[in-house]
Image 1 (cartoon, helix red, strand yellow):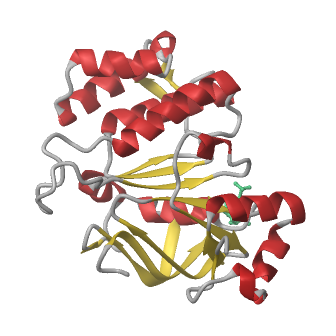
Image 2 (cartoon, rainbow, N blue to C red; image 1 turned 180 degrees about the horizontal axis):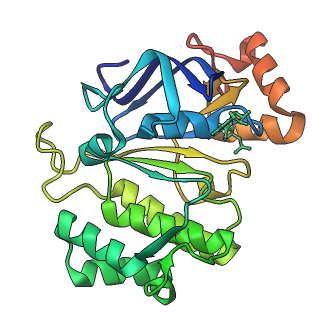
Length: 272
Ligand SMILES: Nc1ncnc2c1ncn2[C@@H]1O[C@H](COP(=O)(O)OP(=O)(O)OP(=O)(O)O)[C@@H](O)[C@H]1O
């Protein structure tokens, strides 16, 4: 699996402030796939996502993170960002003293984006009114999510990590955001996947955490994983898993593994 995956998380153990949060997490996302991450509050979803991005307060005690064939476990956040990992955080930080327009100019110059391109994304995410303000300063929860996602779409990473993109966002914004994420995940960089020789091949991948699964109405997901107590307990069909969780709760979804009709040889929860 590791060989075909754009992201492999292998036997990952992570501590935060001396407390073990993740226990032997394994996750593989093949090139071109989008995976959903479900799990109760405090189960470790954000910790895993922030650790993949490389935030220094998440201490990797054991295990490896491999991105696009390179071991990034000991790489800094900005090295990972340059390689093509990007995150939209659950609680986007306020950056006082930095105007959103200046951050846009910086990303546009690094990524060589045209004004027309940045303007079209800004309009699509309905972000123009925040351009002259410090990043996320005084914005509502939903507005700062929009800003965060806007910056991520501009950066256009190869792996999009989206931590609860649908929480606190009104239905109209969710429609816009969902469509943009969908388009971004489907759009390859100019020239496509030159390494594979298939210009039209999907090369981007995504990992999306969500409680409501609303975002999954817009973004097609290939597989879902259920995290509980810092471990991925089971994986399978996103719709079936969410259906189980909504009707009977997380524990039922995990116990479903005991039932033959619910699992395949990989212990994934399947429809048959
Ligand atoms: N910076 C931190 N310092 C101390 N504990 C932390 C820190 N970040 C996370 N934790 C703890 O790690 C555990 C997992 O948190 P995490 O944010 O990953 O949960 P989550 O699954 O994303 O939850 P939610 O669905 O509520 O967002 C929680 O018990 C949380 O209190």
